[in-house]
Length: 333
Image (cartoon, rainbow, N blue to C red):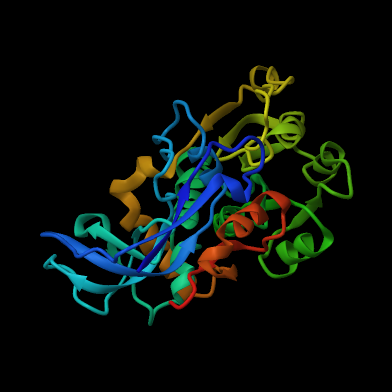
């Protein structure tokens, strides 16, 4: 049987276990051009919270009663597609379930000998590509510039900081807790870290970025974005990747009060969605893989086990409990 987790109700605030429905159905047979995949690991991402909401966005919402959308890694059990054979390891949109029947055109092979499978959901997956294109295409960092990353200890933030260092920048991360800040500096190579739980972020950015912020890569929004806007350098670039501080609001989030800093500093603020770069994914994977092979890029995964624990595991993203990329290991995989 194929266990599945379906969206039962639109959450108000943080998702509750009652917002989910646990179902089982027979494992499907692949049709022509399809591949049956045994799901091994699922990616848990802040964006999933937005996919649960009704309304216009960059991707249609998950429908009530539908299996929850999620990227994953799995093993081919049966194939009716010429590019895939039984035993292949693949990545794609597998959703929150034990087995996924997916058109072969929507899957990519991954090499478990080159990196552990969870890494393909982290630095070598969507988070890594989000960091790559968001920083390099929109942020356009130049050697000697100051790059600040919010949500810096997360899957995207750690890769952003490491790429910025590779490009010759001074890198400051914003994270919650002394342990995460220490990790950024001592293990990820950041030049400095700001603990938003223990100090005033605006004042700390002024201290760590005396010439202002040239590139701000934002995963948090809210007060953190306000603090960055107050410390911009001339012609700064702000990359809006996410706003995890806002996703569970029950009322509309206010815009930044000091947005006129963009005018004063002739700065630019632009949103990015990694799906827009689908035709260039191979480019990102090539560079990210090379940096990892050379020891210039590190990846850290926070793995939790069990499909039944999906609702509670997802909440770790919003409480700050995860350390690195949050990955769900499907039970019995």
